[in-house]
Amino acid sequence: MESENQPTLEENLEVKDAQLIFRNEWDALEEEYGHENLRFPKEIILLGGAPGSGKGTQTQFIMDARGLTCPPIVVSDLLNTPQMRAIKESGGMVGDQEVVGILFRRMLQEEFRDGCVLDGFPRTRMQVECLKMLVARINALYREYYETPLAVKFRKPTIHGMVLFVDEKTSVTRQLKRGAQVEEHNAEVRASGLGELWDERATDVDPEKARHRYRVFKEKTWDALKSLKETFHYHFVNAQGNIKEVEQNILDELQYQSSLELDPRTLDFIRHIPLASEIVLHARQDLVRRLDAYEIEHGELFHQVLKIITEKFVPIVLRHAISGLAVINSEDAVFDDPLALAMVIDIFSERGFHAVTNVNRSEIPERIDLENGEIHCLQKKIYRFQVKFKGSEIRRGGH
Picture (cartoon, rainbow, N blue to C red):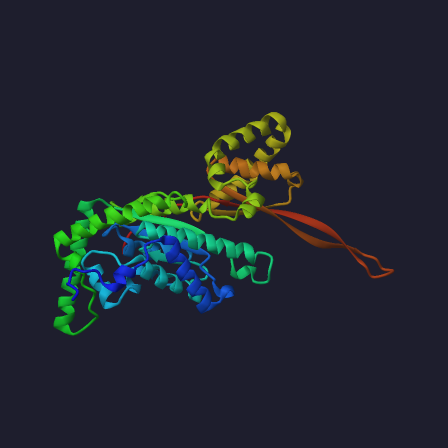
């Protein structure tokens, strides 16, 4: 007769080898869905973090930042059998085989084709290895179908890692705070009969269980998440601060990772276009250099442009000091030289304005050929300048 502490048959048979786990699950997917239907998300955002680090709070913010409209895949919500719930409520983790099998099938649903957030995956070294093998298989499918009509269905995957970190004290404090909020909410629901009950977690009301949950994270998940950096580029996100501070940390990390996500072939085609951040970094120095060059190398034209701006443009700008937007039309032939247009933009920029220009062409009837009725037109150029700046705030007294 088996004792209560003896491993179950299922536990004895649990597969511990990542390659075997992955191969078994992949073969099952091939059989269930068919090779041509193994269409995984184009973008996979791995959202991990310590208990109480704010994954639930930040999920929607991350999805909005990446333009995703599908719901997040919360791994703990997928593992809802009574046995799995008992493991989670004690602060433990469900077996890798179950997690991988359920998760991969969920990712194949059509609503996640463009991208998905995986909240709570991977959590173990075994899951990290399975993830690496999954990405390798998706890349293999991308190469297999690259020059076929199905290419659009098998795109090269983009992987983002977002790992939110807090220390043990912060984690326990936040877990217990969440538990108190859940208890208060549920008490009101039970008393009034209005609203829906929230899930109550034992780890959110017992300080020792909350500490145990954090330590399980540090002992098992922390090393697994660090090992991800061997394959995918990311930094840990400091989630100790307030919501706005954490959001900014997340945006900084996404900006860093986005610079690495293009297909290498695509990047080769566009890498000659400078990054906006690089342009801005040296914008002031470049502007000064151009203005000095105008004066030294094109002095006569430069002074013509300055005179037009001073005598004709500035009075119009002054009349629009409240709105902060002046539209100026000019037919002056000096602007037939593209360099003169560039000078206008740079001069206004140096003085703190934002100027843009375009050319409007119109045809004015000049004469009619009486023999054939043909109308000969004179082409007229009108240079339109928009000068924007911060307008004045009008303060009116109350009545």
